[in-house]
Image (spheres, rainbow over the protein chains, first blue to last red):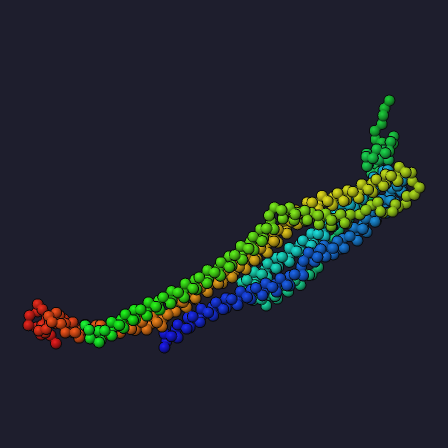
Length: 202
Length: 227
């Protein structure tokens, strides 16, 4: 009788092992579905929103500094009598060029925040997936994925902007004033002043 | 040799041998089925992994790469240029009734600055587009690797069950083999008994106690009697 029993138990053990492996694979598949579901919120519109939020953080500060710089340059040029002059237009061009560059640079920085968040999310997703493969435990994977998702939704820390335009205000007005005074200044060539350190000796 | 014991023993031996063979055959077939099923599963995992790999590779082929780069550069450039100030739209501060040459100088400067910003945005976008495309490719490769890892995980898990299945297969037909072996043993015993019991005319008679001839003496030992 024992021999018949041995025959059945070995076959049953094999069937059970196969069934457990199939169940393990099923758990991984369902776990992956849950991971995909949790991470599906992190799509292109989400990262675009991160970038837009970063831009919203920087843009008002840039505009405030630009408005102040523009006013200061206007006053400086008016004080020196150069507001209505091509030299004044040139000074504004330099300030505006800097503003144009800054517009692009802050947009670039904002896009960088979107990319950084995406990099973090992808790393977390990879960790969660590897954990699922190792444990075949969808509940643990779901919990890790949810935690990772919450962490990824936390706002990134933004670096504040420094002083952006004051150099152009000072250099713009001062350079024109200096040129008017006979020095090299902004090299506009607009002021043909006899005042200077050089002197023509007859 | 034609007594019922010999015939029965011979039949038991033959039957036992056939049953043992059938039992072994069942075990071999079960092992073959297990290996064949596993080979099929492994083929499935391999195909799925190859499919994931090819899908991932399609995304890095030249046309897809070129298009992806264009898209990334275009998206970046659009995001940058959208943020560039149109300086011509900013009202002039503190200037009025100025000569046309001054107004033109300001208008030209504003346009130049706007164009400069847009151009700077396009150049920066073209440059940053490469980084975006490369990063997007890394993400795609990472996802492809995850899919392949999943199939590899299934493959290893399935393969680890095969030894258990082969162990189970090796016990298939064990009942037949055991019964056959019992019959073989009985047949052997029967034949041994029949050989022992069968009287011989002149030959030695093999017994458990030794070998003796019809006279009851061991040849070559003289008149020593045995038993």
